[in-house]
Length: 478
Image (cartoon, rainbow, N blue to C red; front, side):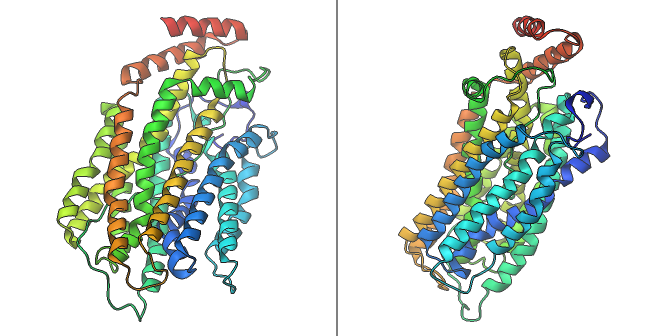
């Protein structure tokens, strides 16, 4: 079963996944992206120009909300891991139970209350509530990845299906919310646009589902006593490939988040693209959706690390081109090119994390069941860094003199937006790729790990825990 509805002993991980199974798994990620794309692209400008709270308060809402979401991931993950099996499984009650409350909190996040003095508390409260509830949904949903199969290619294929559906969900959310924002933001008293030379940065797909996988180790027996959380945490934090991968994509995700959250403001106040931003966003996301199957083929053909470098570096020359040629035609060319990089940045980390977990299993034969720590703290670090970057970027707008609700903004605001869309993301991407150079799991290492785990899964049936550990150590050293 794909949705954790069977006990571990009844789960058949070796079977090849059907297309229907992969689609059923992938569809679960789409609804969150419909909502996630709206908050990622439009929440900042909504808080500033519709709810009309000042930039400092908006920065606090964005930062605290993101930080709260980051902290809630490992907390919810802990409680999910402790959940008991029910008639509908261990994961499904979480997803079904929290969904109605997610809908209510999301509705009130976009509702303007009749009072003005307490709006900051209103939006902060509902944003934190929304982050908590959506975590309660996506922690168990994302836990399904390691349940699906022990075959790396099958997991990678299922991840590609998932990313495609998520980008399509992002596309739908950006299309609907983008048209609403575009019509609402073209006000009758705002006939003139700010026009200043600048560039259009890449836009990302919506915030990918930041999630954690909470599956039990397929080599573990149901009667094994798990290692305490703090001991497992220390072991995971000492695993070099995990630290390198997390640090690299932390910087890359911060770059994507900066562009994503400031893009609409950039189009509105830095360049004369107020009437086109929603169509440019759709172009980026359509390009990303179409290119995910290409990147899935590319990583299988040339390797995941090569795919990461080729995909993510692709965006930078086109961004630089638009810095010097800021017009609508170039904007659409950059949008199509950016979609390729967006797809790579969405697909690669979730495809590489299972390889890191497999490497950890072989390097630490006596330590089992730490997948939750790997995924939850990857999410924690990336969310927390994104929250800091969003808070700082919004504070930069206040220091530049952003005038809430005004039709025109000072030149300092336009210049700040250009830096937030262009120079800052490029710097973060370069830093992330430099760190990724140190990532040690090559395709040869990945194949060796897969072979060792396949041999172990055949040999360890009926073996004791100590004998299994000895065999793991032997395979790890040979």
